[in-house]
Amino acid sequence: MRTVIEGGWVVAFDGTGHRVYEEGAVAFEGDRIVHAGGRHGGPADVRIDARGALVCPGFINTHIHPNGGGSDYLLLDESRNDWRSANYLSASAPLKGKVQPPDAAETAALRAFTLLHALRNGTTTVVDVGGLRGEWEGWVRQIETLGMRVYTGPSFRDHNIHTDAEGRLYYDEDAETGRRHFAEAKDFLRRYDGAAGGRVRGLVNPAQVETCSEPMLREAAALAAELDLPIHTHAGGNLLEFDRILKTGRKTPIAYLADIGFLTRRTLIGHGVFTTAHPWSHYPFGDDVQRLAASGATLGHCPYKYAKMAMTLNSFARYRAAGVNVALGTDTYPMDMVSEMRWAAVLARVVEGNYQACPPRDVFNAATLAPCRFLGRDDLGRLAPGAKADLLVVRLSHLGNGIYHDPIKALVDFACGRDVDTVIVDGKTLIRGGHALLVDEDAVYAQARAAVARGWERIPEWRPGGVGLDQIIPPAFPIERKR
Ligand SMILES: [Zn+2]
Image (cartoon, rainbow, N blue to C red; front, side, top):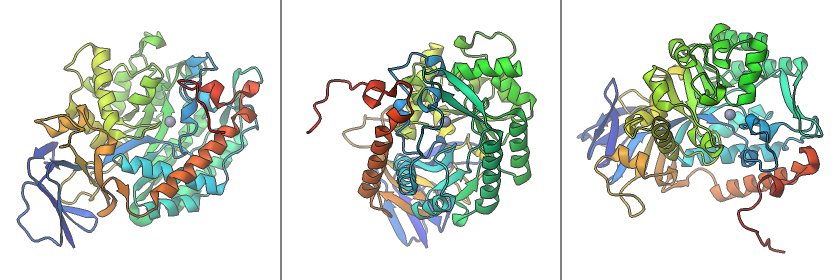
């Protein structure tokens, strides 16, 4: 069966880069594109009118934690002043043994919400960089049912982070759990890589550079090479991590990873904000940006999340100019790849003091073609014959948007994820008119909201001082709650 989407601005791939066709067409049969570019003269079984819309490849989101986002809310913890540890530490270092993980039903609800939320905002390929544990068979079945493409594998580490009763952070070696979770990951990858008709693919996922011992990072890299899979870890995410690796490894996190052979073309580094390039690291020795470029590794840049914490990469433009392959991810909410492109472009210009830095082309490439390097795919992130039919129809021509002459600039400068009208993955329409077709999205939202609310109620059990959500994130204005 041939479906033709016609009349819109079509972003087609010409073998080297993207090229935009006014009143173009995309045709696909099954899960593969058969035509992308100008008008399509041939017959069609289904025709979709995309006039006034952008028809572009689905975005590859390199940083999603499928956990429902309740903990993201805690990142800007106003009850704590140790923001050198900002990023995940301030939100996720609990009193030891006090966190109760969500139950199986809550886990499923939180995972479903994350995937659908990302999909609805334009992500067709999810890179799962570590989420809730367990129920792995159910997780794979969820991906199968919901229809998106997911690179996933249980994350593992042999050090945990905790706070003591006074809120001091400490790292706690736990080799036994590390070994068990590594074995769990191996088993998952051998069992499920290629599941759901190839939409589930494996990702080797050592959690963070400073929570994994050197032998564990080396073993993880060897496993990725053996299984021919991509590998991810978080590095350069916060200043405490940077200092800790300087102290233990006598190098910056990026130099350390390069020297132990962790950085290859199949490697994704989450964040990479704190490198020799960042002024706060005050570290003048060596050049992490050059090291990243030379390794061929991909940097997963999550601009909005860091901007919320008053930090940013120094800078997207500088890394790109040095030859680093920069991709984009959302990390926290909203998982809106359209807005993320705008944040990436604007922040790079502010850092550089140059409005010509980071043009829309660079951020669009970062959301589409760039991640294909570490994924090892030449059939994603592009619309061309033979590529996967993973694509979006994004409404651009309406009152909520600006008047434009270039649809890519309109997307990056004006639009947001809620302008995504239609999402197709593997040739199947999952979102139409901005709504999920295969599931009851209101029910998914309600279940996730209830699960997050239960998680928030339990915060005083694991937070030093017993503080709760309203102390961590005081309301913007006093809220008169209903009785
Ligand atoms: Zn992360």
